[in-house]
Length: 206
Image (tube, rainbow, N blue to C red):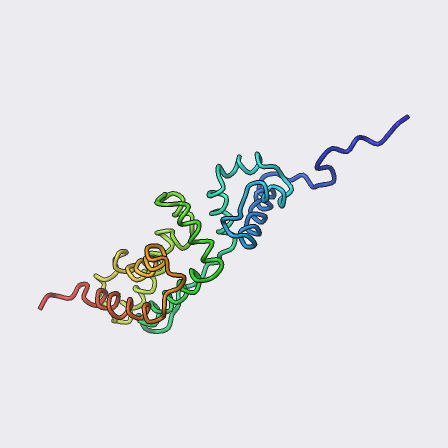
């Protein structure tokens, strides 16, 4: 008598490979991050949600942190630099955006990832907000516009000068552990540190 073939575990599921499988895993990991934070992210739960197994995940991401960082990237979007018409307005808006993000539930995930990554530059560079190239490019764009308007001298267009404000704000979260930075702190960073530094750059000594 001819019978039905015995069903194996996983029968009835679409077999996925390559990009489709990676997308399913990252989507599952992103959902886990959103629901449970980095502390609740486990390979077991991601595998179950994605309909795959842990070995498949480990072949692509060697540990939970690498998977968490890759999943976090799925939750972020690229935002264009502001163009308020003044360097002060642009710089302050950039800080306010960063402050809102780092103070949000998604920002809490970012802070947990930063803590877990420690000082590993190869991992930190994968985070949009921590990538030196991404952050520097945004601030250089804002500063370049200011130079074109005559608000600063061309000598101010230096990566360390351009990014000093965001570095100071990051220290408020990473070093001091604040849940959010008061707006007066952002204004102080811009008015007392950033703008004086930018305006003095390239100015001949008296």
